[in-house]
Image (tube, rainbow over all chains, first blue to last red; front, side, top):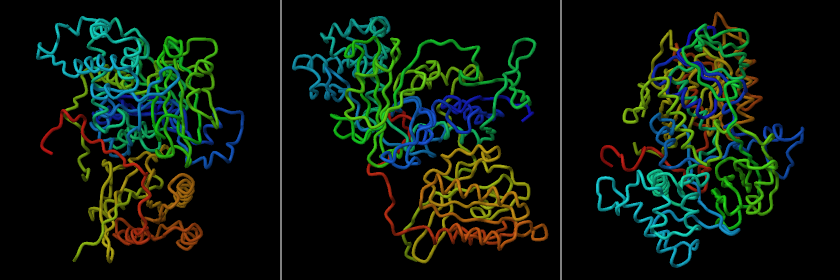
Length: 430
Length: 197
């Protein structure tokens, strides 16, 4: 280990593993270490035994939950946008070949205590029971405008400059009421709060387009989920890195990140040895004195022996409880997967309820989410209720995570990822 | 010959570093041997088929990519594998102990019906033998493993071990696939599709 590397990566969370993979592909010499004896850090998936070990004081899982090894329970709930940045990254790197994915059955939004399917196109808007007769028409017209908007064709702009006009004004122009705006802004454009309303409309249009394009790829929902859980994703990118020569060391206590006289990083010390390097990339937990808490997220893992009511017996789904529906400033997210994804024992569903913390009693903030689940067989609230949001935020997809990766990549290499020229191992068979 | 049915299986190799995992694969897939094989073969996976009497068994062979070196092999590697070859070096008794640990790990974590073969590699180096073949055979029998001593260098028993696995793999059972189909993601975006379809 007392060698010289181009780049040392600390922590094997998804973002770190993507960076590691990309660096190795660029023929940089990478050393990747983790203090844990498993891959994934905070984005790992745990067996039932590991879950009980982490969240209880030595309790054993009850027999009713089935075999521990049938479980791969995500600590961080996320789905993959089918047409989003992570899918591009998976295909670009070829890591999609190591993993198998299923589409998520449905995407829902709560209104007045009831759960509705999220309409995302003009056609769906007309069919939705989420809106009354007149709002449906107005919503359809708005979707049609957003879908047909073409930068190159001013006749589709209806006199709006979407780089300047706030989206709020366009909602008003189309006569959308608060309820309609709420589901478009939160369940389609996937905003965490209402700050987007006063920003230029393009941002919301882009997000709506990502949702609609993702939905169009496989139908039923815009999301994908990997078999065996999200923990497979970092492992897939770690394998990519290893194939291109990256060195992996788990269970490595990291003593310190070493800086030279000029204050620039020059190595990492572990078990008394220093590995020299030009760059260090790591998750925030490896730099306790360099991170600042910017907010906290409360999450609760629930195990059910039935699908979530009113979701058409979905084997997997997402439900968004918009802020106003729960009298809050930020949305509550519910994500649900099941035995159908090889992450739970037969007949079991795994549900994660999460939100951004606003009060002194974070667990209570999740109650409007719990209320939708029916009987809950077991619950595991995140131990301290606090995570640093620069690690993994409350959103239910990976788009913001990928933005971070792009930034780090650019900072190290000085250029953007060239998605038109994917790497392919020379000796690869197919 | 009327081509029989083709069955595809994922096969993984496990074992201590430098026992000859990649060499066995290279011998089987390409008929080659390199004295100073690089520590990894640099490919995601290789494929090779074995023809039995009435069926063809196509192996998708995954290499550890060197992750085993510091006990850091990702479990994803053997996820869904239907077959595994656990390799040790007959000139190094420690590697058999490590192989036994891998067998345990597979029995604990991998799919319950996985076919496991134990390979005592480097059997061309008989003068340096440190592991008794009867002892290894007994261990294999006790644990329901296939067992052969192999030499990637001398091309001894390499095809044979893959054929033995191919024979033992269940071919009549319908694959226990999840009820709903798995989606294939292979184009970054439908709008940016290159070439024809």
